[in-house]
Length: 383
Image 1 (cartoon, helix red, strand yellow):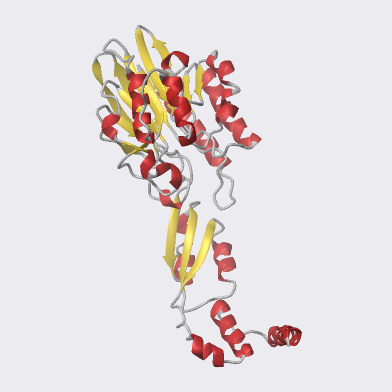
Image 2 (cartoon, rainbow, N blue to C red; image 1 turned 30 degrees about the vertical axis):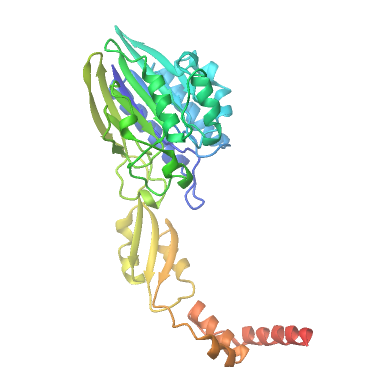
């Protein structure tokens, strides 16, 4: 039985106001192409399909077209909700999708209520345990839903670990055992583009609390693709696009899993090619302009080394590099004038020095005249 693991699409996310729908569309096509080429039996999506609770119609169109294409290719899909996904919004279409072989699980559920999905391919049966993101504010409700007769731990991490144990009890040597979860494993590497509150220590689950009886553990939540040292083969698939500059340099990927009952799974990473790269660029204006052809269509965060403020430099950079999303200057900062010296300087002189430092050019006569006029009005009004 063959699975393909992907995660953290964040469809609808913009980058400094730039839409990335075209890149997500290219990624969608590439993942479908891989699934067909590798003859995948089931696609696993471990959360954060959308970037916001209220995705745009454009984002929803792309995601549901993706599912429709998989349906046309007869590739079933298991999808869980992440912390960016609106559980009620996804739950509204769950029953419709289940009948189509698209198993949507937006919220945690007990094994008998959808927390375990039985999936058959040929003579083999897979037990797919799913744990969508568990909000801390709902931890007590989820615990009671999982097993009201048990005494649950008060701490978030312990409670989630117990949920994993509960869901994996149905795993056996006669089935292919898969766990799909959206959570934070202690010690795993973040990218800085995740929501900080959800990758804090109280949310961290020990890797050793993950089930040892799984053929594969498909994790979502962190955007950096990485293997986790756990009792069973375990990976964060990561985001398929570099979503923010904290992810620059990361090779994005999907994970291919071959699993059969009673024997260890074979896990292979497949690199993704679609999507723009993000890059930090530093240098003088002349160096940056000279190197412009080498940046291709990468999105850029540019730092220009100058001797001081240069009016209009950001516009000049963007003329050569329209994909420059951020432009900042790096120059020696002027020494701070002591407060005693400032008190002795005339107001107009203070304004002239401030303007020179901020803009790298002297204030015009017209601007100084406006300053004097405004200053006179204020001082007269307060006399």
